[in-house]
Image (cartoon, rainbow, N blue to C red; front, side, top):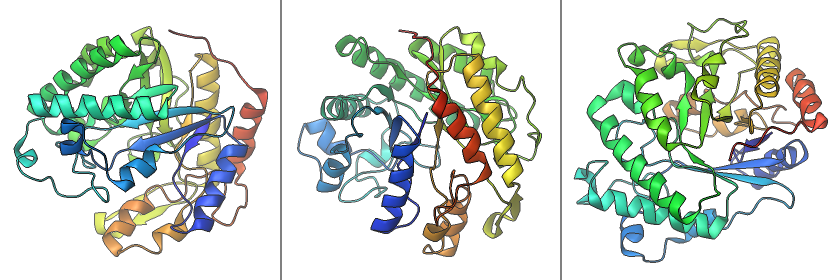
Length: 338
């Protein structure tokens, strides 16, 4: 059980608040590289920028495990990841801006980057796709390209690191077609096909992001995860503890302390029942202070995840934290699947 490194604020204090809670209430840390790939440097085997190297220098505290997640897709999950140079999400330089997801150059560069990250950071778990199935909802042709990239990357990494669990994550609302643009996609068939190249069925789950998900989630909501006959994991999850108005999107996402508490209990009971390998709650701490520093459109996007922490930004435990801590204190040990 654990959290990502999402900070409570864009300050040293905000980073420390989130990190201290995560280290005290979790035994796994999620590091996500979702802001681009240093494409040219990875292709040529050249040194990465200081920003890339600084991010790769992270090591979890003693006794904690590390989940490393690397996405070859951009933040909208519509195309190739942007360029990671001195900072994340920089425009793709030529000719990378025209490269398909399955081009030989993309395949080589992505594999090289993943290999260097693994050799540097020594993760316990490796995701080489983040919410990959969202691309299927948006562009079937590019999804086929992504499948080819994933298959070849998975096979190459497993030849070198045979005992390292390697997988991609599936966004549940798209898989179950609660997301509007997923309605006509063949999620079950396509995800099952790619699961032949995945050691776990790994999920991303934020039920409050779709009004079609019942506020009291049915107990069998995640039963489909057992169909794949593989280990199950939750790479990111969360429930908002308050309603969030997104003005630029013209919508309100529901949430309350009761919703968050019920969801946390549902997820962890399901994980215990079905022997999940791990569960990540994306944020340890609310990030409303961080949101207040951003421009309006960026603030609306960041506000989606602002209230999914187990404590408020001023360190007050939320009701859901009692459920989380109860399960964490029990030190439940899942079955091994590899």
